Image (cartoon, rainbow, N blue to C red; front, side, top):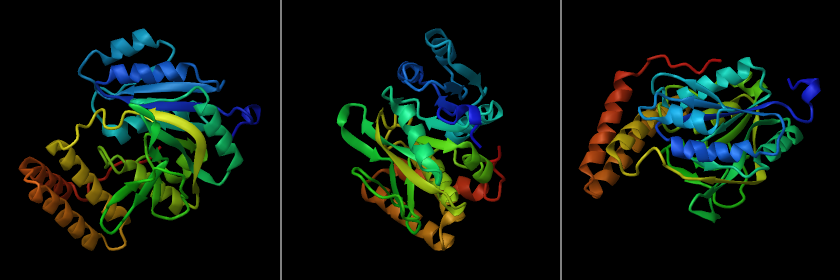
Amino acid sequence: MISPDHSDTPSVYCVIVNWNGWQDTIACLDALRVQDYPNLTVVVVDNGSANESVAQIRAAHPWATLIETGQNLGFPGGCNAGTRVAYKNGADFIWLLNNDTVAPPDTARLLVRTALDHPEAGVIGAVLYYMHDAGQVQAWGGGRINLTTAYTTHFTAPASFAAPDTYFTGASMLIPRRVCEAVGLLYEGFFMYCDDSDFCLRVRQAGYALVMCEGTAIRHREGASSPKRSPLIDQLATTSTLRLLERHAPYPGVSMTLYLGLRSFSRLLRGRWGNLAGVWRGTRIYRREKGVPFSQQL
């Protein structure tokens, strides 16, 4: 419930996760510092960085709240640490924002205006542009996930999010307090990847809608912390995707078999033996940790 004293400017807590990426985080904070929304608080969660991130961020932006987890909790775990702080401090909205983004000064205001105009919204998404090309859409809010094969696509033009298989990318998601209370937080079983699609699917199941804020224009340096074609990324993505299919696919066993077959064949066809090994490692981790409880509670 939004406080009557803040009906026009409800409190927004922007949560940013940093892991050894203080240069991107400082650039992100540079943009957040000049937002034209008057009731914005920024929480930076340092996720166990092994470099000078904490010192650099504190020196550049002492106004931002910085908390240290002491270890790498994964992206969902880091987001949840910040979200819990925001919730305890009475935030009306939590704005999850990647540290490798730059948000124009009107972004927070536009997101909140959209949320207030759409009380049915469980998540408010934003338009993302490439950092290196501000004229090219990276993702129109998010995209669609096929829960049979786990194949995902990003929308790059105005699109509807009415279909049940659509989702917003976690690079920017504004979430009302009441939705966190009803749905919970990001599922920490996803160390990396799939946390955003899982959350959006749960939001829909709770009866809320996904609503786009079409006037936004956030620039995003995609993959700043995850080198493409890395065997480790294949491992993490495989484990997370198997967990997503287990949680949401109509026929999980069939979907997981198809997903692993297609992913393995793709790496085999290209001779990427290290990546293929990453897929198998991710599968073994999923099987070994199957049934392990992971938190998504406030």
